[in-house]
Length: 96
Image 1 (spheres, one colour):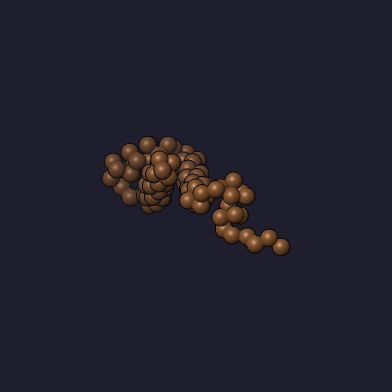
Image 2 (cartoon, helix red, strand yellow):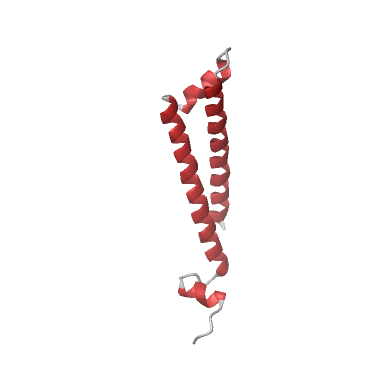
């Protein structure tokens, strides 16, 4: 039986550089997160029947409490911030 090393396994998979294998894995994880967050934003828009821009305007200008709108806006804001973070991380990985 042939002795295997991490380097030989990665080279057999097309990654002669272990750091490149790690970059590719990180890229795939981040792209998965990005897709999941974008889908969540789309679901919020579909459930609310309004764009997130419209939701933002209502959230920041209405004088009465709308707890469902507040929750939707806060969820959307979290996903939006998470998307910005993932896109920044992808830019760093791609630049390396």
